[in-house]
Length: 227
View (tube, rainbow, N blue to C red):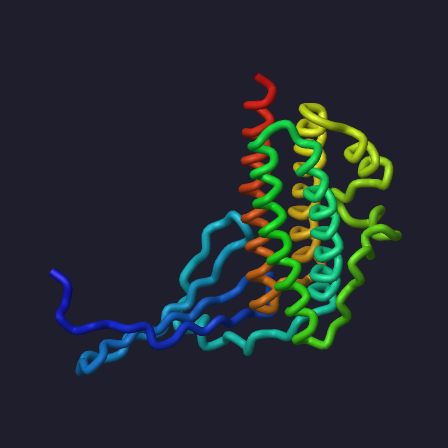
């Protein structure tokens, strides 16, 4: 049976260490109105994306520094990912009058909704830190060659020319490649020493998880359309 004393969460504090790209979540629970001693804080160090975390010992907890500030790698990641997302919106904008499959249309709508929301998050992150927000068409310039997964102008023109089932196949091919590029950008963030700030780490992990799920969904849809 559960205890009659009502338990409430009183604190959830995120902290990070300068070593590696891991974030630390500190969760403390107390019993409301109870004379029981307050349990020691539990600190969990998540692993890299896709890997399990571990609980830190009290000695390790005592060595935790304050959460670090954002780095140039974080800023570059956000600025470039905005441009990357903008091109995904350019791609989904083509679907309404070209796609033959209702499943492709539904998928494109989900991608559009999530990427617009993430663009707003990244713009807010940059604004709060006094960093420059890139223009809406930054990706049409030199960034095409430097950001993984970006379609070239020729590939965008090819997608614009197609209709029906051919468009569906090409859209899925290009969008899978585009999403895989975003996963590569997350890896590049951590390789460059970014992702130490809790907010940038959390956002990068969410991008990694969400786009990985969408890649699997698109591959499954490709298989269904090929039957």
